[in-house]
Image (cartoon, rainbow, N blue to C red):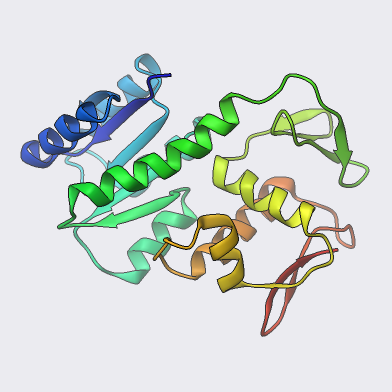
Length: 228
């Protein structure tokens, strides 16, 4: 399968380097230099993953990230020249799955894209058979199909959100620290902020919106999280 990558970066030199390098890895790549162009390509090109620069000429990368997260179930890797933790946290809260700080090494970009697409590949190639696990009266999950149903409607989870949810389901009643969750779900080579775990847990809670008292991911203060 040839994955489609959309590079949204207004600096021509960086856009060209990323596009050239990704094509060299066998990906089908399109480059966008503005938010307007990116929105058009999102609809026409239908990428499997997006590399998104924060600073765009016609719209903030954060706003575009929010739009993509709300309308498409694809990973987003933010590109930023700022090494500000607040910017990184904001990007993650708006739906980004990862971030890379400029200047970057192209091998790092390729590695992070490969890891993100590995999760997409798992998502796209599920078995059509499988049974649902009832999380509660309103929410059920089909592990084989990677499908979440709430009140008879499918809930859109991004690959990493789904990975986190299934991790908790398979390790029910076990308490994990944030560091352990990063290692088990994101991988040992992930060097991002530990707040990433908190942000993704918050996203899951918001999307599933479980009623008070129903079993879900609980915060264990001073330690981490557990699903009861």
